Image 1 (cartoon, rainbow, N blue to C red):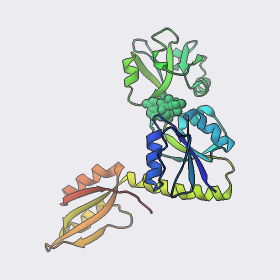
Image 2 (tube, helix red, strand yellow; image 1 turned 120 degrees about the horizontal axis):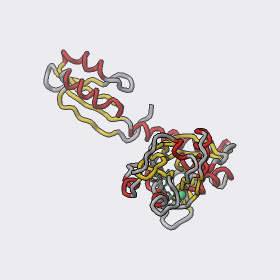
Image 3 (cartoon, protein in one colour; image 1 turned 90 degrees about the vertical axis):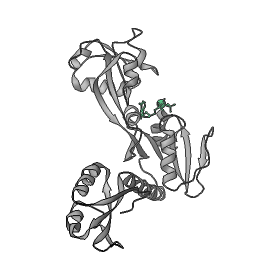
Image 4 (cartoon, rainbow, N blue to C red; image 1 turned 90 degrees about the horizontal axis):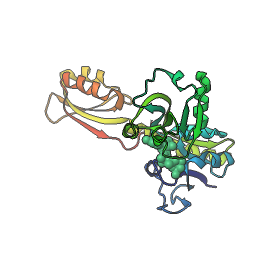
Length: 284
Ligand code: ATP
Ligand code: ZN
């Protein structure tokens, strides 16, 4: 029994999907120009597909699970289950209009043409807002549509916004924030579900490690209580005596979100020689 995993063949999600499997300790033979490959040390088979096709393959059970953008999951609207956010492929699906247009709110779009590769999501958004727009589905280069007179607005994926800027467009509404997710077939066989649980356990360990840093610092003993009070840690920090009397070494794990805040407070409290080290895996 193997777990069949669909990932994007080439494009923005390919590298990070393969990297994540690798960080989960799964060795995959180089899959360039291949449709399918196997892992040597975990019972999975990897299928390389166009991202747009992945939800359908997973719904049909041709693949058991897939790595794909939430934007594609919502657009394709297939019967699949989102199991885990993967933390890469972050972008947003936004509406943009020509930079010189006076846009105040969605009512601007009433009766206008919107070019997009995401007609289902855009239609739903317009219905929710009670706006009647004319949605033109096109398959690529959406950003040039206003310039060539095809549409007054577009709806497309944005990350930095530089593509919009270069095409004289301005982002006016964000419909969706998206990232890569792991989807699975509904009604996965028990044995496959067990393999998926094993894979998920590893993915979660990798994700947690990315959000956390291992911190080592030196503290004068009379400041230890105050410094330890600043550290969350997994249980409590490790405290070891230094060779120099009156000093200790404190080890702990800090979350990325409040990292700089805590580092500043640690310095103020008298911590010295602070070292910050990346964590490879984190199992709690
Ligand atoms: P395919 O040939 O597989 O159909 P594609 O051209 O549809 O590829 P890519 O441009 O490689 O797709 O994007 C794949 C996914 O990467 C998107 O669906 C989205 O989830 C994510 N993504 C992240 N950032 C961006 C971005 N700035 N622009 C487009 N997609 C992005
Ligand atoms: Zn695609």
